Image 1 (cartoon, helix red, strand yellow):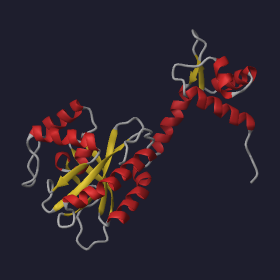
Image 2 (image 1 turned 90 degrees about the vertical axis):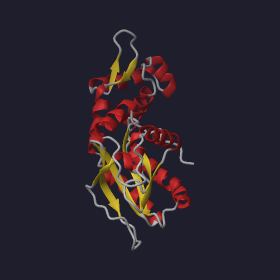
Image 3 (image 1 turned 180 degrees about the vertical axis):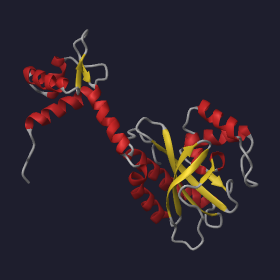
Length: 259
């Protein structure tokens, strides 16, 4: 296969990557040593990237660090990401592996909103549709997101929307609710055992954005006759792995460990 590498571009990108490893900046001599280039070559390449805004030089220390053009490009990439499109392969794989309904949901004003759904091949399935809003406190999806939000933000949601009872199994006690979020935070998954809808159970896992914030969740749902506690525990690794895959597609680098 023919090599179309442009050596000068390759060197410039290597420098850019190396500078990114030093958030407090790096001296040109040290940089040249790390990349194995002549100092004069590094100086010319850095000068070119400085003119384009990819590299900045601290006027006091003389050290080089990333410029705001890199941030601008990153923000443009992030804004172009369609979560539904990025998540779909993982959602489809999860549905195929579990033979149950799979949901992708976002948090919005005290509710979770289904933004994507992959149907189950089973004849007995959960009746839901994209765009449906469900109370955040009574769903695995909601708890999976809330567990990883700042406590003050969750307190505000609980204070504003409360913990209304939807079924005989809905958690309405504040202390019990906080305990369930603590458990979700430590395990990386959440259950909904008929808390939102009688006869329906689900297991959910959080999805993280590039900045580490929980922005969505993925779940597997089905009738309680099939979704016993033992089966839900069997599905946990699959759901967590789907959440991790989607998080990585959104730019999250330090995804939680899937057992």
